[in-house]
Length: 317
View 1 (cartoon, rainbow, N blue to C red):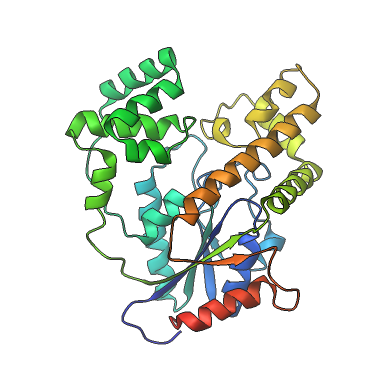
View 2: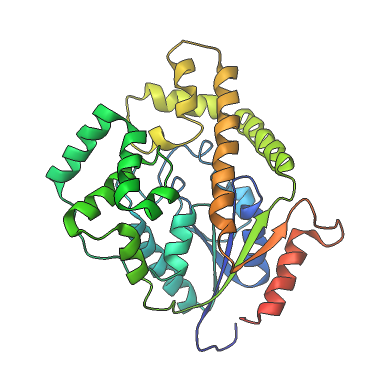
């Protein structure tokens, strides 16, 4: 790694099952790097198969950070993630190595790489409980619609199932009178301290992406997904994070003896495809991403060679 005014960071992003893990490892192997995960589920302990954590074999000896570092019930805000990731980037640079951010949680990636400065707006427990009670009474869609009235920009970015962030955005509005999206704009005043290359893996043909997702779910089942979620369910633990993970909640009817597991597996495939579509929508808005279309790369070039070409043009190393 040569001397630069700003130290380099490479990010590999894209939808689930696109091949980010493998490409991140190859980049780290070839450019003396270490991987930092940007995945809001993999950061928690447990449910390794359901959250598709890379195995030791897939890591190939490359250090991976921010995987299984939090207990299942620990809160982790975007600001918490960014603080942890910034510290890891500094540690990796201090070792003279290249940080490689790998993940599909777009809010984590963008908040980190855009150097978002989070406003110090403390939580108001009473207000939050009132908003949660309202959500229980009226439903998630109604809360998102309420957010649409005061902060349409944030509401557009959030799925109605992401109730925790909807509640937080409403809380910020009620406490400050300023939309969370405006706080976000103000938070971008300080440029990032790194030279950044973003590489995205996508698909020209969405059906090929969905076929890859369905195959990966089948592979997860072969690896022991059903045993993993059954053990979790019968352990008596009720993780807040487990309820959010695709691959667990879809199997609850089977765990309760209400249906055969095949129905839950089909739901996992369906929900993962929907999730991948939302991820693609998020990342495609970013003009700074250098895209590699997996289904269009020639056999002789390969995904890594295409990434290496982007890195050579970037000149940040």
